[in-house]
Amino acid sequence: MSVVVGGTFIGLFFLVWVAVLILPTIFFILTQQRALAKCSPANQTMSPGLAWLQIVPVLGFVWQFFVVSALANSLANEFRARGIQEEDRPGYGVGLAMCITRVCVIIPILGFFSLVASLILWIVYWVKIAGFSAKLDLAPGGQFALPPYGGGYYGPGTTGVAPYASGGLPQAGYAGAPQAPAPAASPSTSEPSSAGSQPCATCGASVPAGQAFCNQCGAKV
Image (cartoon, rainbow, N blue to C red; front, side):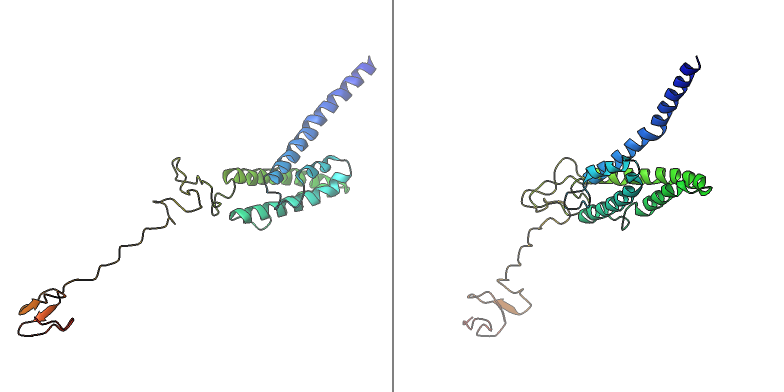
């Protein structure tokens, strides 16, 4: 009977351990992997799949530092490429503090306080990375940067018609669209008649009354 009770207790403890620790860790690493994957390959400083090495015992305590740094650099590169204003290394400060407090858990006496701090920092860091990842979803391909030439662009305020037509030039009616040149003023063919003047029969210029020749073309009036 005691063996059955002991086995049941161990089974319940294992399920609780999986639910409390393993599952959140899996979803957390999945968030990191997705954020890395949303960065273009040219901006990634680490392959997204390498984030899963954090789940390896012992190695994970060291590898987490590399993941946090690489993710911050990758996001910074991607945000810069898309023209999105963000902090220099997104999430790096909180992530580094999380990693340090996780390692300090093994220190006697200080371990309990480090555990509490690491859990809080873990949640804060997780939320920040999820927010950065969502921001990349809201700005696919650089919504806040100049749209690529030759492609359509659906930005804020558009109603189903891409303001950027093929060839990369904005369509008429949108900011930045090429405007038709204003018609050049045609040269005047005649000067306004003033009192005591008459138009020249040859060029149409105004000739003062009593003058025999036109000042502009020299023709006799």
